[in-house]
Structures are given as structure tokens and as C-alpha cells.
Length: 223
Ligand code: DX5
Ligand code: ZN
Image (cartoon, rainbow, N blue to C red; front, side, top):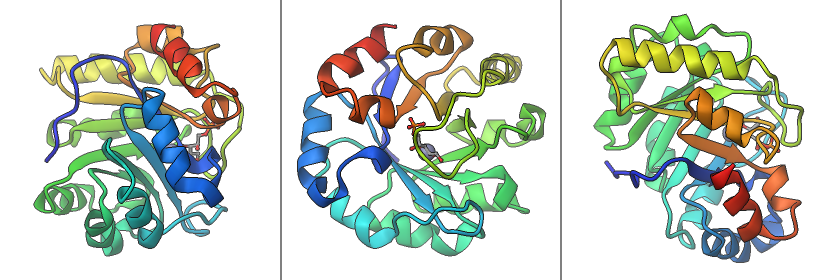
């Protein structure tokens, strides 16, 4: 399992908003600009309305990536595909709580592949549902939009969910557990997200539409 840098916050640009026809150049440019992780959004047209990329493209990205791949599985029955995405180069495998009836077993399967395990929750899913799995995972991904598309408006309730999760983790003595936030993240909300307790900021459209990746990432980091 990889270890992430201890600097906070970590910035994870979502490749969903990059130019897929120039994926190798985009990966190089975003890493050069200061990305800590590459966030890869996998969608299946079942759990979420959109369809994006599969293991084949993750493998293509991996061949050009120097930073870890943070693979966000927005797919039904993710257990069936963990091995394929790990083989393709995923360093972090994040599944949705809503897709896993046997979440503990799924987390064990991710660890058996020597990947970091993340669990994500949708905006309508309460943080309290994660209480009994927190001690088993490396990361929680709080969705601050309904998953499926880039460029949506940030849902403000995410601040409260991040604070609540941070308190829950502290109460269990889990100071290393990472909190990632995804959806509508920009320079408008980065400071508030960091003070709520977010460790990893995923940002897609804001970074890729900024015109200056490095300057935007710097602003996201400093708040
Ligand atoms: C949404 C994805 C996000 C998305 C974020 O379903 O999980 O990672 O790409 O994009 P922005 O930053 O544009 O909201
Ligand atoms: Zn995502």
C-alpha cells in the first residue's frame, strides 16, 4: 500500500474535466502544476446516470502518471471490478457505501489487493452510517454533489458532514484517517473545507477551466 505525503491539504484534480484526446499531456501538465493525486471517476450508467471510463483507460493513464491514482468507483457491485482496477494501476480504491451490502468484506478485498481503501457517501447518506467501518479504512470521500457529472453546484451541507466525520474519527482515535471532498470544490470554498477538516480536495472543472493549472492549484492549497 502506498503512503501519501503528510502535507495537507492534498490536491486531487479530477481528470473527468481534462481533454481526454490529449490524456498523456494533460496528466503531465497537471502533475507539473502540483497535483498530489490523480482522481479518476469511474461511472457505469447504473449507480449513476453517466458512463465514463473502465480499466483500459485507467491503465493508459497509469502509464503516464507519476502521482498515485485515486480511483472513485461510482459503479454497482464494485466487488466484481476491484481486481481489474487494481491491476490497471489504482493506488486508492474508493467504493460507495450505497453500493456495498457487505461493506466490511469489500474493504477486506481492497486491502487484500494491497490498495488503500476509501468509502464514499452521497449527499443524502448520513455520516453516522460509517461509524462501524471507520477503523478499517484509510479514507472517507464525502460527496458534495450528487455523483454523475462534473461542473455541478457545491452542496453546502458538506461542511457539517466533514466536521461531524472528523469528530467521529477523533472519538475513535483515528487521527490518520483521511477525509476527501468531491464535487463543486473551488477557490470559493477551499478555506472553509479545510477548516471543516478536509484533507484531500478533489476539483475538476474549476482547475481544468482555469487556464492556469499551477496558479489555481496553488490557490486551492493556500485557501
Ligand atoms: C462527480 C465526480 C467528481 C467530479 C468533480 O460525480 O465524482 O469527481 O469530476 O468535478 P467538479 O469539480 O467539476 O465538481
Ligand atoms: Zn469523483
